[in-house]
Image 1 (cartoon, rainbow, N blue to C red):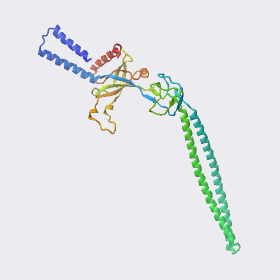
Image 2 (image 1 turned 90 degrees about the horizontal axis):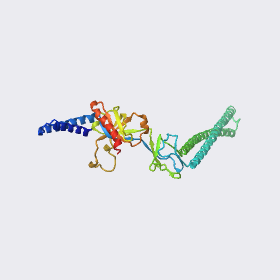
Image 3 (image 1 turned 180 degrees about the horizontal axis):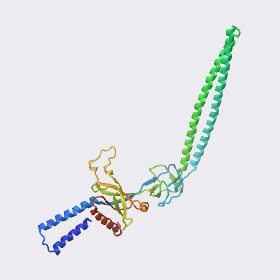
Image 4 (image 1 turned 45 degrees about the horizontal axis):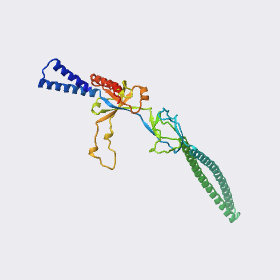
Length: 374
């Protein structure tokens, strides 16, 4: 558009001198040049701050690296590259299940043994409780016998021999010791039962982990989208290492349209401002949208912690920020290809008379995508 304004202004100068026969002098030539520079410069400044335009537009989508959670040879490949898949329903591939099925059976047996041990210890706990009751009864009987003989001896000295009294006293003491022993056995049985129950919980957790690993042998689509860079082959070993993904998954449930602008022209840009976008993949078409957010951060301003000092010569910035745009066309958002480029303009709340320049520029660009497919 700047070139168009320059051509129009040059044409006006030509008409003045060639058709109207105005005699050129140093003063009027200098005046026309100054007026032209001021006119075009003023228009460009107001235009850029009221309706900034960017030819750095890109469509981005989240990319998920496909890494299995278990290892093993791949037995079946289902997904076809670049074919639409549904999250959690469509299968990507399957890993050999036999070792994980054996692990599940082993953990099930371990859980069963732990539960049987709990039942056995619960029975032992009941026996220990009964032993306490029995020992307490024996102690009460021994005490009653011992006290009775003592009372008899007090009323009639020598009626009960000293040896019998001593035996009764010892039997009573032994009964009390038996009660304490039964209580200790009960306490031990209680602790053993608690430990056995924890073993059941551990066995259940191990079984849950084994069943989880078994389910992970079938790898499903992590989101709505498609796989690309598909490198899996039947018989190949799948390993749960992030450094060796099986392929890349493109998430089509989310799309980000980002345009890059100079920082100064974003002064008047606010979320909700109207946007027009022309895409190279859709020549001749204009799509509407709004500003979703201004990304007021750039990696050029990020200092990464390392063992090396920063070099002043390496610190620089292109002076640009990215703006996230929202497309109004829902069907386009779902189908637009990742990496699509184009041009976008933002219509701010300022300088509405200058918006027409960007409106024309975007449409010229859209039609030029037919003529200049580069």
